[in-house]
Length: 372
Ligand SMILES: Nc1ncnc2c1ncn2[C@@H]1O[C@H](COP(=O)(O)OP(=O)(O)OP(=O)(O)O)[C@@H](O)[C@H]1O
Ligand SMILES: N[C@@H](CCO)C(=O)O
Image (cartoon, rainbow, N blue to C red; front, side, top):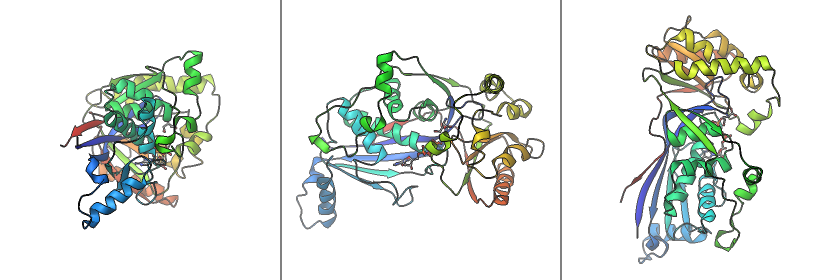
């Protein structure tokens, strides 16, 4: 049966200052997958229709029966792999399908991806790609997995829960990973290469990958005062999450941990209060667990985090590094353009140029809509 549907997954900003690997907010910037399945695409009747013949060639050349395209305006266009064995979204979908004994996509699958989320900038591009891939596998395999179960699959790939929980569930979320039994832990710590084999080998690969343990992640959704908007200042360079995690220490002092825990406890409620209080939010967004160590990777970060305040810029509530950086997230109720220009000017002093976006929380999280 031919079928068309759209998967939509929001960007996200993780940590929000003190909530390293714990907090995240989804943002109104959406990765979209347009999926069109018709077995007739693989065998066109009209051999004079050059588009149909090209489409069939691409589908039949792919070991997983799929033609994958990005819109030319997409972030990552010409950069991300289009082979379904290598692309993060389709590899993730194949992982989910193979866990359920389905080896490839349905014959004649066309996927067009529109991605406005900049890659490697701290706006959860990989989290959105993983969530989209898990939802794609769920739809293509008619698996009827719940969002809670889909999060387990996401956690086998992106192993911290903050971005993926916000992207899947929507809104302002807190999350943790439950204690796993030694057997479950062994399964979850299987190297990524064994979860997502590359190349996948199409239908000739007979071995199923490891199923995730059940209910790995636990989460809550906090209130977010809708007057609070998210200004994202996006520097023109990429910083991979892996590199940005590699500079963090293995242990912390009690003083630094208590500093973060105190702020985290206040911030989770302060963001829902009305009116939003900058005297509470600005200091509660400070952090001693990741931002101080990432200063070496983001020129100007110390300046940004200290020189632009609610006193210098009315309307501003708080500032932090977005995810692993280098994007800066500023929460504000007013004067968005002035605040953005001020932050861009600080980066400019450090020879970094930036673009900016005014975003809001994406309350619905990831969605699937049937088109036909
Ligand atoms: N839409 C996409 N299609 C294919 N691959 C993607 C897509 N989005 C992200 N990726 C992959 O994820 C990588 C970026 O992931 P990374 O975790 O380093 O940064 P991020 O997710 O943007 O930032 P953060 O996790 O700090 O929010 C890209 O280089 C690319 O390999
Ligand atoms: N909590 C993660 C988010 C980025 O994926 C980090 O800061 O490394």
